[in-house]
Length: 271
Length: 250
Image 1 (cartoon, each protein chain N blue to C red):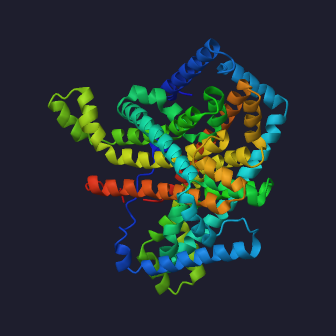
Image 2 (cartoon, chains in turn orange, green; image 1 turned 135 degrees about the horizontal axis):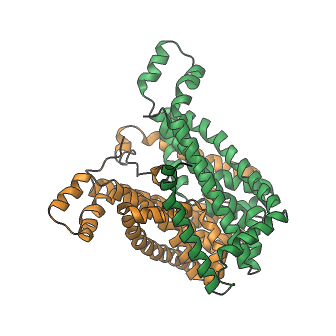
Image 3 (cartoon, rainbow over the protein chains, first blue to last red; image 1 turned 45 degrees about the horizontal axis):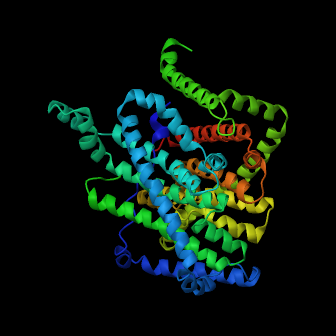
């Protein structure tokens, strides 16, 4: 079996920084397309859909109501806290296992099929099992988030650790560096871009994991807020929650792209 | 199998055997409500297969997966090519595609449920939504990396727009689209299970839900093992497809 199954996408730095959009004339088509998309949505809903279905004008009208709603505020906080906690645990686990898998042939051989296997498994199928194990509680959500996030970190960090230039290792060895220091001072910094790519994937998956867990378990959080409001036909309010999730998704993406550019200017995508 | 092949496969077999052994020991030394050993899981999988219920549910799921996935490819690839060809459209729509791509699709399921109900169509829509964006995104990425020279040469030979698509754009973009197809396979599988969990319980999703609700741990393990194996198999298949088409991509 080749390494190809371990290859995960590396962040693309292809999109230009936003300020450039004004100069190269991209802003106008973007604004026009945005308005057209919203107008089509509004028109289709008004003409063909029942009144409760979310439409742009009603969503905008709902935003001020929703963001001052303490229930919404609490839901967002609970979910974000769980995602942050889960991501932190997944990072510690994922980075240490990933470094081992990437640098040790024995560990790689022992674990590769399990890591790839669990990575390929649709993460939401573990929910019924986790709910048996941890009950219908926040613990199940946390476990789901960790499960959703950890394998993409392992896979990416292992990839990065494998790609450390041989010269780096040789120089460190000729200065009689110990194995542990080699991992922390050479391998880890050198695989940072991969780690960030893994983190970006993991963050997206963690968010999905949290929402799915809240749907499944009916425990409080932004996912449950969306579920509850759409069940009671408050689609506009529920959609504000979706917008927030989209914002987090894009936010993670921008954060990773920015830190790759800012902290690792020497790193270029292989193109 | 020759000696060399055996030597290469040995660590894999060993690691799988150790894993199964650990599972067996863990299963035997804990309560059956918490975990069941590997042997019980396989036994349950076998009885489920023999009774025929598993095969019917599997076909049900496969139909859903197939419909959503094929729809995603049929829509994603031509739309991606169109966006790549019409620059204004691409520049205008790309940020919104990225936005939707970054949104967790599962969050849309409650809306789909209350608007479209419990039928087959809303479930196909869920699988489609999960799968279409990787295809679309990768096709656009591929098509925009077509060298302008290629299009200019075709133009100077007075190629028609249709011939340009058929002879230049489509073949050039195919490997990229296949990367999207590989990613879409994984996401369509998640969409399939999500649709079966949260819309109407059918197929493999129903098996696992029923087992979980009746605290039938063996049933839960058996169905997770099965869906896991399907996931790994589909992933392998996706990689094979991608590598097949990537042979002539630099």
